[in-house]
Image (tube, rainbow, N blue to C red):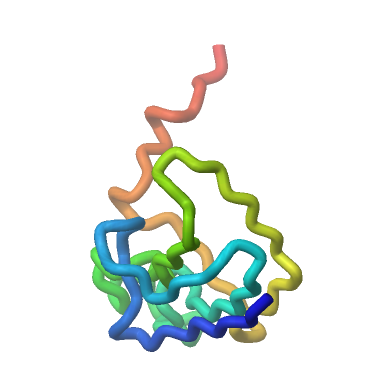
Length: 111
């Protein structure tokens, strides 16, 4: 078993799932220590910042990867075990940006 580290820098993040070459190739049973950012790429650093003014919409939800698993084929089911999760910083940010979710269409109206 091998321990791999994947700690991409901001310019190396992907903003879609798939569609690019793997950043790391592993074998089944290997351990991967992955560093990633929050949905705003760590750019929202104070309560007075509006995410919609600090982060371009096409740079939301940075992804660390992809990670290729040797021998895995499309359609295979892979088991991933999280040993631990450590926050990147001591604060968290969350919001709903205009146009990102259509809440009115998803919510049921009371009768």
